[in-house]
Length: 148
Image 1 (tube, rainbow, N blue to C red):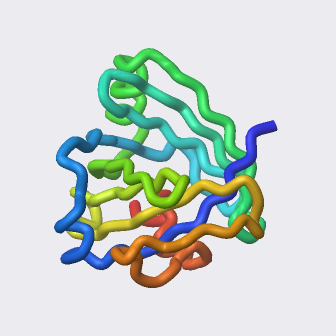
Image 2 (cartoon, rainbow, N blue to C red):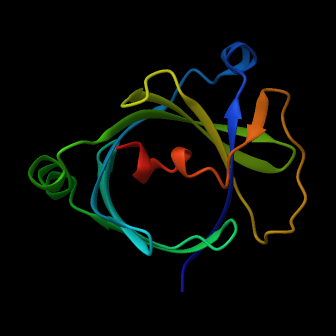
């Protein structure tokens, strides 16, 4: 069983821009199914395609199953089945033993920057980089599936 334990934060733009890595990866993703109990996402990043099934969040934990699929099929699914999609550039940033994923949204919420950290348990301790603003892990408007 796949489990995702993730916390999500807004980012202080000016501080992030000063230390942002030079190389990010473009991600395009759409949703084949969105309901309160599960989402089915299709994603293209670099030259790879993925399909991901996520369960309902319980706190910051939810079931997650992700599978690589042919990139041409992922692109076709997005084109044929997703009337809207998300485009974002993802950066990876190491901070005190943790890898942060930082997404700069190109659409539909151009200019939004969100940082995520995956944990091994909901109680796991970590320190915040100085470019982190407020936590939005429980704020439904910042779930990617709700942005479109």
